[in-house]
Amino acid sequence: MTEQATRVTVHGPRREGVPALEARRLTKHFPLAALGSRGRVVHAVDDISLALPQGTVTAVVGESGSGKSTLARLLTGLIKPTSGQLVLGGRPVGGRPRERRAYTSDVHLVLQDPFSSLNAAHSVRYHIQRPLKLHTRLRGAELEATTVELLERVSLSPGAEYADKFPHELSGGQRQRVAIARGLAVGPRVLLADEPVSMLDVSIRLGVLNLFDELRDNENLAILYVTHDIASARYLADTIVVMYAGQVVESGPATQITDSPQHPYTQLLLSAAPDPSRGRAPVLRGKGSPPSLVSPPEGCRFHPRCPFAMPVCSQRTPPPLPVGPDQIAACWLHGEPDGAATAE
Ligand code: SF4
Image 1 (cartoon, rainbow, N blue to C red):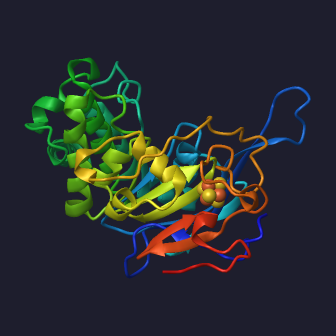
Image 2: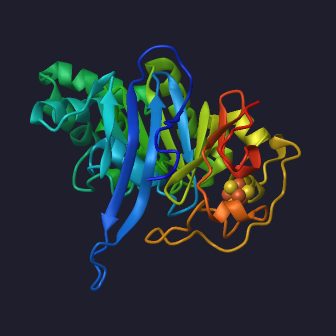
Protein backbone atom coordinates (compact mmCIF):
# COMPACT_ATOMS: atom_id res chain seq x y z
CA MET A 1 0.00 0.00 0.00
CA THR A 2 1.36 3.42 -0.88
CA GLU A 3 1.78 6.43 1.34
CA GLN A 4 -1.31 7.88 -0.35
CA ALA A 5 -3.53 5.02 0.72
CA THR A 6 -6.07 7.20 2.49
CA ARG A 7 -6.58 9.54 -0.47
CA VAL A 8 -9.08 8.17 -3.00
CA THR A 9 -9.30 9.84 -6.40
CA VAL A 10 -12.29 8.84 -8.51
CA HIS A 11 -11.59 9.05 -12.24
CA GLY A 12 -14.30 9.54 -14.86
CA PRO A 13 -16.67 12.18 -16.25
CA ARG A 14 -18.05 14.65 -13.70
CA ARG A 15 -21.87 14.47 -13.59
CA GLU A 16 -24.56 15.11 -11.01
CA GLY A 17 -26.34 12.12 -9.51
CA VAL A 18 -25.50 8.49 -8.93
CA PRO A 19 -23.17 6.94 -11.56
CA ALA A 20 -24.46 3.91 -13.45
CA LEU A 21 -21.39 1.96 -12.35
CA GLU A 22 -18.57 2.67 -9.93
CA ALA A 23 -15.35 0.86 -9.19
CA ARG A 24 -14.05 1.58 -5.72
CA ARG A 25 -10.36 0.94 -5.14
CA LEU A 26 -10.25 -2.10 -7.44
CA THR A 27 -7.09 -4.19 -7.24
CA LYS A 28 -6.32 -7.41 -9.09
CA HIS A 29 -3.18 -9.45 -8.42
CA PHE A 30 -2.88 -12.75 -10.33
CA PRO A 31 -0.84 -15.46 -8.55
CA LEU A 32 2.12 -16.67 -10.61
CA ALA A 33 1.70 -20.33 -11.50
CA ALA A 34 5.30 -21.02 -12.54
CA LEU A 35 7.51 -23.36 -10.51
CA GLY A 36 9.39 -21.51 -7.75
CA SER A 37 7.03 -18.51 -7.96
CA ARG A 38 5.08 -19.26 -4.79
CA GLY A 39 3.72 -16.07 -3.23
CA ARG A 40 4.60 -13.91 -6.22
CA VAL A 41 1.86 -12.09 -8.07
CA VAL A 42 1.26 -10.07 -11.22
CA HIS A 43 0.11 -6.56 -10.25
CA ALA A 44 -2.40 -6.25 -13.11
CA VAL A 45 -4.57 -3.50 -11.56
CA ASP A 46 -3.70 -1.50 -8.46
CA ASP A 47 -6.16 0.61 -6.47
CA ILE A 48 -8.31 2.16 -9.23
CA SER A 49 -11.49 4.09 -8.54
CA LEU A 50 -13.67 4.97 -11.51
CA ALA A 51 -17.19 6.34 -12.01
CA LEU A 52 -19.22 5.80 -15.20
CA PRO A 53 -22.26 8.15 -15.33
CA GLN A 54 -25.18 7.55 -17.71
CA GLY A 55 -24.88 9.20 -21.11
CA THR A 56 -21.08 9.42 -21.11
CA VAL A 57 -18.12 7.69 -22.73
CA THR A 58 -14.98 7.10 -20.67
CA ALA A 59 -11.91 5.93 -22.59
CA VAL A 60 -9.25 3.89 -20.81
CA VAL A 61 -6.03 4.26 -22.77
CA GLY A 62 -2.67 2.53 -22.43
CA GLU A 63 -0.14 0.22 -24.03
CA SER A 64 -0.52 -3.52 -24.13
CA GLY A 65 0.03 -4.81 -20.58
CA SER A 66 -1.10 -1.59 -18.90
CA GLY A 67 -3.98 -3.43 -17.19
CA LYS A 68 -6.79 -1.76 -19.13
CA SER A 69 -8.40 -5.02 -20.33
CA THR A 70 -8.13 -6.52 -16.83
CA LEU A 71 -9.92 -3.44 -15.52
CA ALA A 72 -12.72 -3.98 -18.09
CA ARG A 73 -13.06 -7.63 -17.06
CA LEU A 74 -13.19 -6.68 -13.39
CA LEU A 75 -16.03 -4.31 -14.26
CA THR A 76 -17.95 -7.12 -15.99
CA GLY A 77 -17.67 -9.26 -12.88
CA LEU A 78 -16.08 -12.05 -14.98
CA ILE A 79 -13.07 -12.03 -12.67
CA LYS A 80 -13.09 -11.30 -8.96
CA PRO A 81 -11.00 -8.45 -7.61
CA THR A 82 -8.30 -9.11 -5.05
CA SER A 83 -9.80 -6.18 -3.20
CA GLY A 84 -12.22 -3.35 -3.92
CA GLN A 85 -15.90 -3.06 -4.64
CA LEU A 86 -18.25 -2.63 -7.59
CA VAL A 87 -21.27 -0.38 -7.07
CA LEU A 88 -24.16 -0.54 -9.57
CA GLY A 89 -26.62 2.35 -9.52
CA GLY A 90 -25.48 3.26 -6.00
CA ARG A 91 -25.76 -0.30 -4.60
CA PRO A 92 -22.74 -2.45 -3.74
CA VAL A 93 -22.72 -5.59 -5.88
CA GLY A 94 -22.82 -8.81 -3.85
CA GLY A 95 -22.18 -12.41 -4.84
CA ARG A 96 -25.70 -13.85 -4.53
CA PRO A 97 -27.06 -15.47 -7.75
CA ARG A 98 -29.94 -12.97 -8.01
CA GLU A 99 -27.51 -10.04 -7.74
CA ARG A 100 -25.19 -11.62 -10.29
CA ARG A 101 -28.07 -12.10 -12.77
CA ALA A 102 -29.17 -8.49 -12.36
CA TYR A 103 -25.59 -7.35 -12.84
CA THR A 104 -25.11 -9.28 -16.08
CA SER A 105 -28.31 -7.70 -17.45
CA ASP A 106 -27.13 -4.21 -16.60
CA VAL A 107 -23.48 -4.46 -17.63
CA HIS A 108 -22.56 -5.86 -21.04
CA LEU A 109 -19.11 -6.52 -22.52
CA VAL A 110 -18.43 -5.97 -26.25
CA LEU A 111 -15.41 -8.06 -27.19
CA GLN A 112 -12.50 -7.12 -29.39
CA ASP A 113 -12.92 -9.91 -31.93
CA PRO A 114 -16.25 -9.79 -33.79
CA PHE A 115 -15.23 -12.93 -35.71
CA SER A 116 -15.04 -15.26 -32.71
CA SER A 117 -17.75 -13.61 -30.62
CA LEU A 118 -20.49 -15.02 -32.90
CA ASN A 119 -21.13 -18.73 -33.48
CA ALA A 120 -20.69 -19.50 -37.19
CA ALA A 121 -23.31 -22.27 -37.03
CA HIS A 122 -26.13 -19.93 -36.01
CA SER A 123 -28.00 -17.12 -37.70
CA VAL A 124 -28.10 -13.51 -36.55
CA ARG A 125 -31.67 -14.17 -35.37
CA TYR A 126 -30.43 -16.90 -32.99
CA HIS A 127 -27.74 -14.63 -31.50
CA ILE A 128 -30.22 -11.80 -30.83
CA GLN A 129 -33.09 -13.97 -29.60
CA ARG A 130 -31.07 -16.08 -27.18
CA PRO A 131 -30.61 -13.33 -24.54
CA LEU A 132 -34.17 -12.12 -25.20
CA LYS A 133 -35.54 -15.58 -24.37
CA LEU A 134 -33.36 -15.85 -21.27
CA HIS A 135 -34.02 -12.39 -19.84
CA THR A 136 -37.54 -11.50 -21.08
CA ARG A 137 -40.94 -13.13 -21.59
CA LEU A 138 -41.08 -12.15 -25.27
CA ARG A 139 -42.17 -14.93 -27.60
CA GLY A 140 -43.62 -15.35 -31.12
CA ALA A 141 -44.41 -12.18 -33.11
CA GLU A 142 -43.25 -9.87 -30.28
CA LEU A 143 -39.91 -11.65 -30.12
CA GLU A 144 -39.45 -11.31 -33.88
CA ALA A 145 -40.44 -7.63 -33.88
CA THR A 146 -37.97 -6.89 -31.06
CA THR A 147 -35.22 -8.73 -32.96
CA VAL A 148 -35.79 -6.58 -36.04
CA GLU A 149 -35.95 -3.41 -33.96
CA LEU A 150 -32.66 -4.22 -32.18
CA LEU A 151 -30.88 -4.78 -35.50
CA GLU A 152 -32.20 -1.50 -36.88
CA ARG A 153 -31.07 0.34 -33.71
CA VAL A 154 -27.50 -0.59 -34.66
CA SER A 155 -28.07 0.47 -38.29
CA LEU A 156 -28.48 -3.04 -39.72
CA SER A 157 -31.45 -2.23 -41.87
CA PRO A 158 -33.76 -3.79 -42.97
CA GLY A 159 -33.48 -5.82 -39.78
CA ALA A 160 -35.59 -8.71 -41.09
CA GLU A 161 -33.04 -9.37 -43.84
CA TYR A 162 -30.06 -9.26 -41.51
CA ALA A 163 -31.80 -11.62 -39.06
CA ASP A 164 -31.65 -14.41 -41.66
CA LYS A 165 -27.92 -14.01 -42.34
CA PHE A 166 -25.09 -16.09 -40.89
CA PRO A 167 -21.85 -14.57 -39.49
CA HIS A 168 -19.82 -15.50 -42.59
CA GLU A 169 -22.17 -13.37 -44.72
CA LEU A 170 -21.35 -10.22 -42.72
CA SER A 171 -18.40 -7.83 -42.72
CA GLY A 172 -16.36 -7.30 -39.53
CA GLY A 173 -18.17 -4.05 -38.81
CA GLN A 174 -21.58 -5.70 -39.30
CA ARG A 175 -20.60 -8.54 -36.96
CA GLN A 176 -19.57 -6.03 -34.31
CA ARG A 177 -22.97 -4.34 -34.73
CA VAL A 178 -24.71 -7.71 -34.22
CA ALA A 179 -22.63 -8.25 -31.06
CA ILE A 180 -23.69 -4.80 -29.82
CA ALA A 181 -27.38 -5.48 -30.68
CA ARG A 182 -27.14 -8.74 -28.71
CA GLY A 183 -25.88 -6.71 -25.74
CA LEU A 184 -28.70 -4.18 -26.08
CA ALA A 185 -31.25 -7.03 -26.01
CA VAL A 186 -31.04 -7.25 -22.22
CA GLY A 187 -31.42 -3.47 -21.74
CA PRO A 188 -28.04 -2.70 -20.17
CA ARG A 189 -27.16 0.54 -18.42
CA VAL A 190 -23.47 0.06 -19.09
CA LEU A 191 -21.52 -1.07 -22.18
CA LEU A 192 -17.89 -2.11 -21.71
CA ALA A 193 -16.14 -2.14 -25.08
CA ASP A 194 -12.68 -3.73 -25.06
CA GLU A 195 -10.78 -2.59 -28.18
CA PRO A 196 -14.02 -2.92 -30.21
CA VAL A 197 -12.60 -1.55 -33.47
CA SER A 198 -8.99 -2.70 -33.37
CA MET A 199 -9.67 -5.80 -35.51
CA LEU A 200 -11.78 -3.96 -38.07
CA ASP A 201 -10.62 -2.41 -41.32
CA VAL A 202 -9.73 1.24 -40.90
CA SER A 203 -12.50 2.15 -43.35
CA ILE A 204 -15.27 0.77 -41.11
CA ARG A 205 -13.88 1.75 -37.70
CA LEU A 206 -15.40 5.20 -37.83
CA GLY A 207 -18.91 3.79 -38.42
CA VAL A 208 -18.68 1.62 -35.27
CA LEU A 209 -17.28 4.52 -33.21
CA ASN A 210 -20.19 6.66 -34.43
CA LEU A 211 -22.58 3.92 -33.33
CA PHE A 212 -21.18 4.12 -29.77
CA ASP A 213 -21.60 7.89 -29.98
CA GLU A 214 -25.30 7.44 -30.90
CA LEU A 215 -25.82 4.86 -28.14
CA ARG A 216 -24.45 7.30 -25.57
CA ASP A 217 -26.76 10.08 -26.73
CA ASN A 218 -29.90 8.18 -27.76
CA GLU A 219 -29.90 5.34 -25.22
CA ASN A 220 -28.25 7.26 -22.35
CA LEU A 221 -25.75 4.43 -21.86
CA ALA A 222 -22.61 4.67 -19.75
CA ILE A 223 -19.84 3.42 -22.04
CA LEU A 224 -16.31 2.37 -21.18
CA TYR A 225 -14.11 2.39 -24.28
CA VAL A 226 -10.84 0.50 -23.82
CA THR A 227 -8.22 1.29 -26.45
CA HIS A 228 -4.52 1.67 -27.15
CA ASP A 229 -5.36 4.42 -29.67
CA ILE A 230 -5.51 7.80 -27.93
CA ALA A 231 -6.61 9.52 -31.16
CA SER A 232 -9.83 7.46 -31.30
CA ALA A 233 -10.33 8.09 -27.57
CA ARG A 234 -10.22 11.81 -28.23
CA TYR A 235 -12.75 11.40 -31.07
CA LEU A 236 -15.31 9.45 -29.03
CA ALA A 237 -14.82 10.00 -25.30
CA ASP A 238 -15.90 12.64 -22.80
CA THR A 239 -13.11 11.62 -20.44
CA ILE A 240 -9.77 9.89 -20.93
CA VAL A 241 -8.18 7.77 -18.20
CA VAL A 242 -4.54 6.87 -18.95
CA MET A 243 -3.17 3.65 -17.43
CA TYR A 244 0.43 2.59 -17.06
CA ALA A 245 1.64 -0.62 -15.41
CA GLY A 246 -1.65 -1.29 -13.64
CA GLN A 247 -2.19 2.24 -12.31
CA VAL A 248 -3.95 5.40 -13.48
CA VAL A 249 -1.35 8.07 -14.24
CA GLU A 250 -3.60 10.79 -15.68
CA SER A 251 -7.30 11.49 -16.22
CA GLY A 252 -9.47 14.38 -17.31
CA PRO A 253 -11.71 15.75 -20.08
CA ALA A 254 -10.70 14.19 -23.40
CA THR A 255 -9.82 17.38 -25.26
CA GLN A 256 -7.85 18.69 -22.29
CA ILE A 257 -5.83 15.48 -21.97
CA THR A 258 -4.95 15.48 -25.67
CA ASP A 259 -4.39 19.25 -26.00
CA SER A 260 -2.51 19.67 -22.74
CA PRO A 261 -1.18 16.34 -21.42
CA GLN A 262 0.52 16.80 -18.07
CA HIS A 263 1.99 13.35 -17.41
CA PRO A 264 5.14 12.37 -19.36
CA TYR A 265 3.60 9.00 -20.24
CA THR A 266 0.51 10.65 -21.78
CA GLN A 267 2.87 12.91 -23.73
CA LEU A 268 4.69 9.80 -24.94
CA LEU A 269 1.43 8.18 -26.08
CA LEU A 270 0.43 11.33 -27.95
CA SER A 271 3.85 11.67 -29.55
CA ALA A 272 3.42 8.15 -30.90
CA ALA A 273 -0.02 8.98 -32.36
CA PRO A 274 0.32 12.09 -34.51
CA ASP A 275 -2.97 13.90 -34.96
CA PRO A 276 -3.10 17.04 -37.12
CA SER A 277 -6.19 18.32 -35.28
CA ARG A 278 -4.27 18.33 -32.00
CA GLY A 279 -2.08 21.26 -32.93
CA ARG A 280 1.32 21.61 -31.29
CA ALA A 281 1.48 18.65 -28.95
CA PRO A 282 4.72 18.09 -27.05
CA VAL A 283 7.02 15.55 -28.64
CA LEU A 284 8.74 13.15 -26.26
CA ARG A 285 11.11 10.33 -26.94
CA GLY A 286 10.47 7.57 -24.41
CA LYS A 287 13.09 4.96 -23.63
CA GLY A 288 12.78 1.27 -22.82
CA SER A 289 9.60 -0.75 -22.56
CA PRO A 290 6.88 -1.30 -19.94
CA PRO A 291 8.14 -2.86 -16.68
CA SER A 292 7.52 -6.32 -15.29
CA LEU A 293 4.28 -6.35 -13.35
CA VAL A 294 5.62 -9.11 -11.11
CA SER A 295 8.11 -6.73 -9.52
CA PRO A 296 7.09 -3.24 -10.68
CA PRO A 297 9.57 -0.42 -10.08
CA GLU A 298 9.47 1.33 -6.70
CA GLY A 299 8.11 4.87 -6.61
CA CYS A 300 6.72 6.07 -9.92
CA ARG A 301 6.43 2.97 -12.14
CA PHE A 302 7.27 5.08 -15.19
CA HIS A 303 10.60 6.32 -13.82
CA PRO A 304 12.89 3.88 -15.73
CA ARG A 305 11.48 5.29 -19.00
CA CYS A 306 10.88 8.89 -18.02
CA PRO A 307 13.18 11.57 -19.46
CA PHE A 308 12.30 13.89 -16.54
CA ALA A 309 12.95 11.40 -13.72
CA MET A 310 14.34 12.86 -10.49
CA PRO A 311 15.77 11.03 -7.46
CA VAL A 312 12.43 11.17 -5.64
CA CYS A 313 10.70 9.40 -8.54
CA SER A 314 12.34 6.06 -7.77
CA GLN A 315 11.73 6.40 -4.04
CA ARG A 316 8.16 7.61 -3.56
CA THR A 317 4.90 6.99 -5.39
CA PRO A 318 3.51 10.28 -6.73
CA PRO A 319 -0.04 10.99 -5.57
CA PRO A 320 -2.81 12.05 -7.97
CA LEU A 321 -2.42 15.83 -8.22
CA PRO A 322 -4.79 18.42 -9.72
CA VAL A 323 -3.20 19.85 -12.86
CA GLY A 324 -6.20 21.58 -14.50
CA PRO A 325 -10.00 21.72 -14.36
CA ASP A 326 -11.03 18.11 -13.56
CA GLN A 327 -7.57 16.98 -14.75
CA ILE A 328 -5.37 14.84 -12.52
CA ALA A 329 -1.82 13.56 -13.01
CA ALA A 330 0.28 11.35 -10.76
CA CYS A 331 3.69 12.91 -11.29
CA TRP A 332 6.18 14.67 -9.02
CA LEU A 333 6.62 17.38 -11.66
CA HIS A 334 3.29 18.80 -10.46
CA GLY A 335 3.76 18.77 -6.71
CA GLU A 336 6.27 18.98 -3.92
CA PRO A 337 8.10 15.75 -3.17
CA ASP A 338 7.07 16.20 0.48
CA GLY A 339 3.50 15.53 -0.63
CA ALA A 340 2.16 19.08 -0.73
CA ALA A 341 0.29 19.32 -4.01
CA THR A 342 0.61 22.36 -6.23
CA ALA A 343 -3.04 22.62 -7.14
CA GLU A 344 -3.97 24.99 -9.93
FE1 SF4 B 1 8.62 11.09 -14.61
FE2 SF4 B 1 9.03 11.40 -12.00
FE3 SF4 B 1 6.76 12.25 -13.10
FE4 SF4 B 1 7.23 9.65 -12.83
S1 SF4 B 1 6.98 11.13 -11.18
S2 SF4 B 1 6.43 10.66 -14.64
S3 SF4 B 1 9.43 9.57 -13.23
S4 SF4 B 1 8.84 13.01 -13.51
